[in-house]
Every structure is written in structure tokens, then in C-alpha cells.
Amino acid sequence: MSPIVIVGSGLAGWTAVRELRKLDKALPVTLVTADSGDFYSKPMLSNALVQGKTPARLVGTAADAMATQLGVRLLKETRASGIDRARKALLTDRGEVPYSRLVLALGADPIRLTLAGDAAGAVLSVNDLADYARFRVALDGVRSVAILGAGLIGCEFANDLAAAGHAVTVLDPAAWPLASLLPQAAGEALITPLAQLGVTWRLGQAVTRADHSEGGYRLTLGSGETLSADLVLSAVGLRPRIALAKDAGLMVNRGIVADAFMRTGDPDIFTLGDCAEIEGQTRPFVLPIMHAARALAQTLVGTPTPAAFPPMPVVIKTPACPVAVQPVARDVTGGWKIAADERGVRGLFYDAGQRLKGFALTQGHVDERAALTKQLA
Image (cartoon, rainbow, N blue to C red; front, side):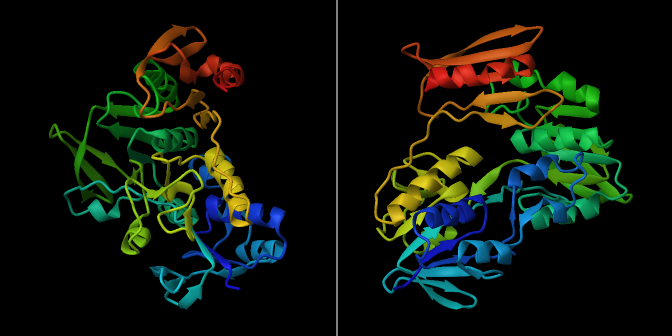
């Protein structure tokens, strides 16, 4: 019998393997990955500097050890190039890999801004351990860092870099930090605490070009203003990897389209993690991925189980201004009720029927996360 083949060795891929092994110790499983396959916590990349963690120290378990512990065949440094759905074979640069069922846990790629200038290609992004290793080398001797993007990753890196003694400038076209996750008052609550740490905010500002300049970089803004930095880091978001699925004729939208069972239009192909769009939603956070992997494992061993996503707040790693948010689904209409006091900002989102659907908490109000989560559930 052909094995279950999982493509991708991030949190989604390895968690799917672990959950499968809890249910069936002997089921043949092959994991295919384009990188080393080492297991590490990706969310720790944006706050590892202050903790003094080198890339090597971020690795929880080496790939070969993971494969041995979990009893899987590991094909590392192996790139998937196509899917032959008729013959049920994954095509790779090391040959064909037959599958009984295929799980696409491909992850996502950093969104790259379209910038003019001779240094546009030198702007760094950090999306995996190898990226982080390159970033740490480039950071050696650097005083000033410009971060493009004031979203979750941009804010976490800003806090980490500033706390480590770097002069940080964050640029974003949005009017306040974390604008895609937080209401304005909650987002603006980050501005002063991070500024006191050493972060300069250039909000409402789009970068149009990046040029080399005197050993560093010169960024040009839409207004025509320029600023200099020793290093430039892009953190403007992630785009699900959908090309492999699209080329195989599977339905894609923002992510690889799947039903509640994580099943694509092909009954033998499933998707999981950052690349997956499950019932119309992408869920690029740790807890939803782990919940989905648990359900998928049940389905793959013969007990069809839909993914269930209870309220799972996101804790943003900005110690200068703690933030917790329960994101509101895009299709929910309603509005925020905001209260601000000496403890921070407390934002509650109610739908048209006055039902609580989400929250945004900063500083001291973060302590209310558990009670509000229970109320949502």
C-alpha cells in the first residue's frame, strides 16, 4: 500500500505526523520537505534576539531524530514539482513519490513589495529558520533597522530589535499598528510604549524605492522623503503557497480551497496549515493549525472528522505593550465598543444581534482574555 505523503515540515506537517502516530503506529507515512526538516517553533523567530537564541538553539528536534521517533520516511531537501492525480504520485526533483492520500502543508511565502531602486532585491524577510540565520549574520554590527510593515510580525520584530539595542523605524501605509487585527484605539496603544523602547513610527507612509547608500540603505517614501538605515527588513505579510495545487487543477482562492474535513476537490488530497483555506478562511496561527491537524489525522485513519475551531485568542509578543486579540471573522458585521483607562484598552466586537464575536485587549486588560474567551465559547 502506498503511504500517506505529507508535503511540508513546518508546524502543520510535523503535527499531522504526530497526530497520526497517536492513532496508528504502523501506518506508512512519508514526509517530503524542501528544507532541512528540523522541527522548531516558527513564532519564536520574531523574539529570539533578546532571548539570546541562535538559529541552532531554536531547533527543538533535528529532522532525522524526528523521523526516527515518529517512524516516518523523511525526504529532506526535496522539492515537489507537480502532482499526477491520475496515477496518485507526487513529482519531485528526486523522482516520483506514490501516495494513497496526499496532504499539502506547504506553508506561505513572504509578500514582497514592488520597490524601485538598486537595493530592492537586498531587502530581507524572515519566514523560516534559514532566513533567520541569514538575518542574524546581516545584523552583525548593525545599528539601525527599518521594518516595512506594522503588522503582527513587524511589531514583534520591532520590539525584539529595539529591546536588543537597535534603533528601529517601522513604516506602514496604515494609520496605526496592527491595523488588520486591532481597532484604532487598541493599535495606537502600542505607539508610545514601543517608542519609549526605541522605535520610531512612520505610519501612513508607503516606501516606494530602496537604494544602496554609504554601506547601508536609503528608503524613499511616497511623499518624496528619504530615510537611511543599516538594514531593511520586510514584514508586510504572507501569501499561501498555492502554485502546486493550482497546477494540479485543484481549486485555489487566497489559499488551497478545502472543506471542513480539509479535503480538496480531489478526495485523496488534503491541505493543512498556512496554505489552506478551510471553508473560506485561512487560519495562519498555531492553535488553529494544531486543532485542524488533530481532526485531519482522525479522517486519514478512517474516522471522518471536521475541523472545529473554538475561540483561540492570539497573543502578540510585544512585551513593551502586551496585546491579546480574538480576531473577528471577515464575514461578521457589527462594531467595536472601546474603553480606555490607565490599564490599557479594552475593545469588544459585537455583531448586529449584540453577540460578542471578538476582542482586542492591551496591557493590563490582557488578563481578561480567559474570561472573554469562555464567554465567546
